[in-house]
Image (cartoon, rainbow, N blue to C red; front, side, top):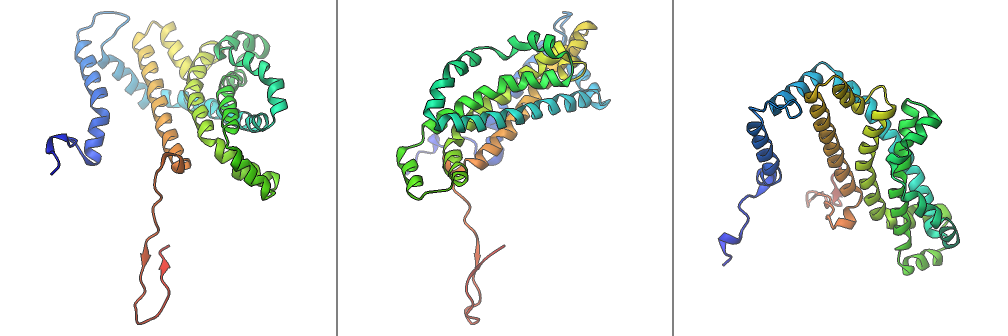
Length: 282
């Protein structure tokens, strides 16, 4: 008989939610009461920070800045995806090309994305264009390098089987190379997703006239620390939500990799007297 004390205390969706969120809730409550009587100009009470955050959400200011920033982030990530996956598949499967470009890639990957901000500002000025370029520069390399490693990690037996069947090039890339490299590629995308928010904020600090980074800078310039804290917390919330969405998409795409069983189709049995075949439900 199983020992009841060894069983988890909470089960089901409610228990899982409690296990997941109890620590953030405790930290927020502690911060709320610990900062309630704060007289520091730089560390305002959490209640004041929440009030500023709620006010700017309700008047639409933060939503406008969010739309501006997310447009740049998503466009920059899309370009980084195309470049990283495309060149990653090409370089990963071609040993001569990989050897030739590897010193160049090793040099560029060592350059922090924020380090190119002054150069981009001098060369391209301010506006959405330079901000998107900075995001693309910083986010392409995690996707590119992980895709290369994913292609290089494909077993030789899989490649030999594909060659034996003489698959067309397009079908070979779409059905063999890309699925095999996808777990590594998704790991690179996850890194780029969090990196894109950092680059977005830094770029808007220096080259932006709108966006969440500019919202934080406006609070600093106006000596409104509550707005600075509100903008920082809001960026963290946006990043968390993007990560949740990404994890959902990742598990849908890589269900076979994580060992998630597929839902078997439900069948309905036709009446025995009709003699009809069993058909799956739509």
